[in-house]
Length: 176
Image (cartoon, rainbow, N blue to C red; front, side):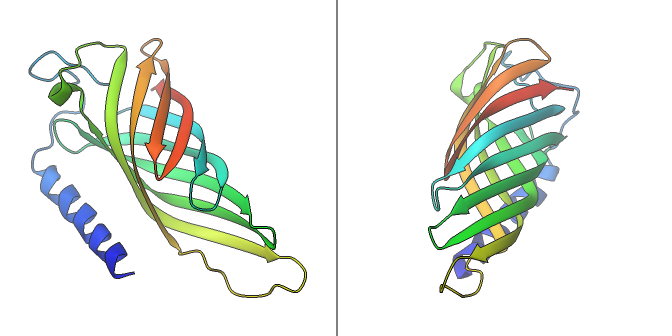
């Protein structure tokens, strides 16, 4: 739990310091003509968690430009898993941070975006136990995740995305 507090403090510190470097949300081109589509993107996907074999759906809307290559989005998720003696369902509400590495990696294509992502939020879990197994909820109300991902833009309004890390997600992205 002590490490979880360190992660939360680090993410908050990182967020606050990047507000000082925030730029105009309408500007999408960086200094070396790389382009990424972040702010204004609705990302929806099906996912799988590696910890419990959980599967579900999650969505995030990137609404805030934190720095030259960073965005923050509101995230919503639902995951479920069965352990053989109990069934769990979790609804999550949190934020997803993305660092678009296009400029750093020299990616100049308007079709591709490459990013690192991090999630943090709160989960509401319902557990149903079978048979003789009884016990409390062993799922933390705080969730987090990290990963790397990519987006391929079919057009300016729609694309596909994939993320892999503490879990995996594949889905679509919409430019709003």
